[in-house]
Length: 180
Image 1 (spheres, one colour):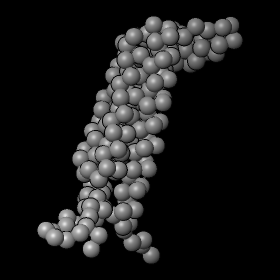
Image 2 (cartoon, helix red, strand yellow):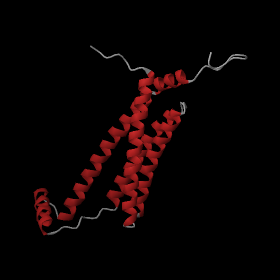
Image 3 (cartoon, one colour):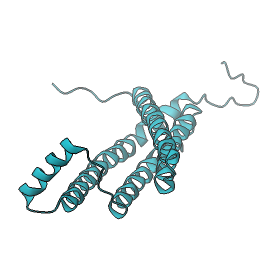
Image 4 (cartoon, one colour):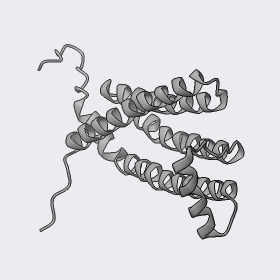
């Protein structure tokens, strides 16, 4: 048996809860990434971290607007997702452009040489390929996740608007009290 659709107020509560969690997570992780990159003077990656934290801040701003009863909060939630997707793609592009093979100790060097030999290529090319595969996978996952979040928010716009409209008290007419 199919479940009935959620009431608009329940939808609003779920959207706010998810967006708050997602936004806080982005602000924390983006900030940590930025601090870590800045500590080794890696300016481009520090900027990526700040932009990711900024996408989280956009999402949190949208939650704040929804809590104040403003429908435009949904626009902020929707906009934060493509922004984060672009930030992730820029991160991937930087990883590809500024690739450096990782430093290896003796045990890891043997493992890397064995992996490179299986693919029939030098160790540095092997690491370059692995990096490309990781960046490509991250990009696909980001498209799916951020696209899914965008779709989630877009599909709930009407229910959120209905919930916010019901929360607004009807304006009192002349000579009437708002409590009547």
